[in-house]
Image (cartoon, rainbow, N blue to C red; front, side, top):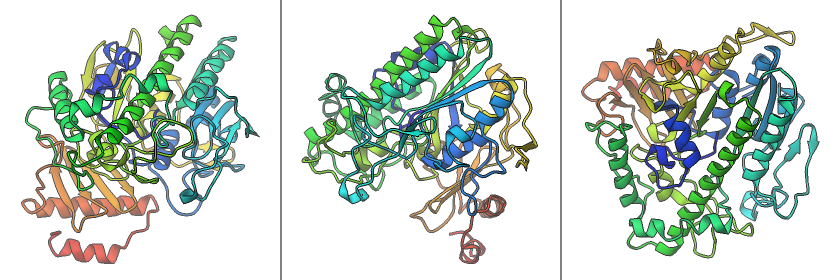
Length: 487
């Protein structure tokens, strides 16, 4: 899993970044067009690990009445490891080494300096040094040639070598921080892309070109309309184009480096003679990121470890072409992820599925692969029932029974999907919106005024879901707005 990468960044999803290793997995495997995350790092990770929607309030996102994929797979006889970003705590009950992973190496926080994690964040972040570790030990010093993407892969490869010394199966959870800010990449990777995005003509032109490729690839339906410009996307012609080009070039270089490392890992699996008996999934934890924590001045240089740059709201939105919005929002651009599944001899090569799926589906999928059952109790605790459904029928080319509903929330942005219908309450909006995703995946035609009863019923269903998952909302004010006819 990568971090803050847009829906259409990689080559096999219509992007400009050179991703031959991911493209090969896609051509030999399956691409999802309607796979969902939770729009944000922490909630996505919690759901992927537990097979549950995020639980809020007392106990946090990783409670004792939940079992993790690491714990469940280890109980099924698997060796387990996590290499990369965790972002769910570092206490006795929330540290990955204590929550089912035999091997852990990586970042316990949300982001860090790619070349030297011991460097504190800039003053606007409080000068915090991010927490890095190996198993139960804290790491505070890093070698001169360190780069997180390489280091996380090195650990994953070491685990492949270690785990294949015996006959027990294994599960590796590799969670890259790329291409999350700060924008840090190697000069040789940046050089591949510098000037390319200026030549494209900026974010608006990039979206249009991706839109064309996505339709040619069969990943987008011709009856959809490309979503309108985001409110945060500023004018390209008056922008500092050289600086903007460099921002996107470094971002692309970070994805390129990740792809190179995915190739290294696949080669390690092949050398260990286990590739033919391995399932690989690839996805992003949320849509492209429009945050700009360090500003956008040309004095903030993307690339070197001394600076803390980001891509900004225009690129961050355009990375999710053709969809609406971005990370932290529950329109499709925030919650949609590219997802590749690769399983030699089982998945039909170069296939596309339009069946909706969600990260909560990984837990039951992995347990079915392991011929194991989801536990009702673990470590003396009654465990919440799993909410995901196995993806195996989809991987086998069959039609899977859909979730009755899927729901999301982050920081005031809300959504619920039922069949092909979706209601959305944007954090910056004043009313529920309604879309028919079968005809309008890009959410360009709000049907709430034409379908007030459906809109109100589905928005009520969202509040029911919020109550079940412990999410506190201002119900009284929302009820007043809904009873007034939504609009």
